Image (tube, rainbow, N blue to C red; front, side, top):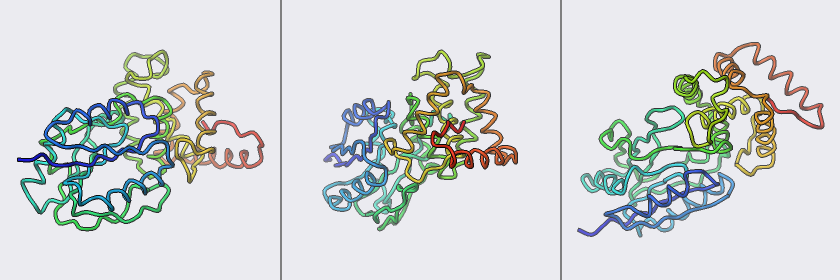
Length: 293
C-alpha cells in the first residue's frame, strides 16, 4: 500500500517546543509529510493563511493535521496511527485526538485532523480565530472515541515564561475558566510541594512550576487588562508582558499573590472586582501605567 500524503500546518511565534515539534514531524514513518509553517504573524492572519492554503490544495493530500508549535507528537508513528482511523472508515472526515497537557496535567482535546473532504470558512474573530465553519463532515471522532491513541502528542512540554503568560492570558480571554482552575490546582499540587514561597524561584524555565506560574500570571493580567489584540508582538500586549515580567524580576510577584488573585477571580470576589475597577480608573488617568498584578 502507498503511504498517505499528509499536510501538517503549524503556526509559530517562538514557542520553546517548536524545534522539537519540527524534528518529530520530520521523523514520521509510514507517511509522506509536507510541513507548512507560518512564523511570527498575528494570530488571526496566520489562521487565515493556513486554512486558505488547505482549501486551495486539499485535493493533493489525504489528510490535514494542525500541529501547534508548542505540541510534540508522541513518537515517529503518530501520524500513521491517526491515518489508520480514516482508512478503516471512509465516513470519518475528522479526528480529534487527546494530548497530554503540561498546564493542567491531564488530557485535553487538541490534535485536529481532517480528510480532504473538509474545507473551512475564513476565520474573522480576533480571539476565537481558530473557530470557523467546517464544511463537508460526515463522521467526526472525538477524544473519547480515540482513547487508545492517548497521548497522541504532548502540549507545552517546557514553555518559556512569555509563552506560558500568553497561554494563560488567551485562556482567560476565551472564557476558559475551567482550564485556569485546573492549572491552579496542578500548580499547587505539583509545584509548591517543596515548601518554597514562590514555585517559580530558582528553577530553570524548562522545569516544573515555571510554566504554570506564568500561565496563572497571564490569566490574572487578562482579568485586569483585557486586550482585543493579544498576539505575541502586539504593542499593547508586549508592553503589558514587560511590566509584569519586571514586577516578577524585582520580587513583587510571589506565587502566593498570584494564587490569591486567581482564587479570588475564579470565585467572583467582590473585593477583587472592586480593585479591578479602581485599577482601570487609575490607568486611564496615568500617563505611565503600572503592572496590573
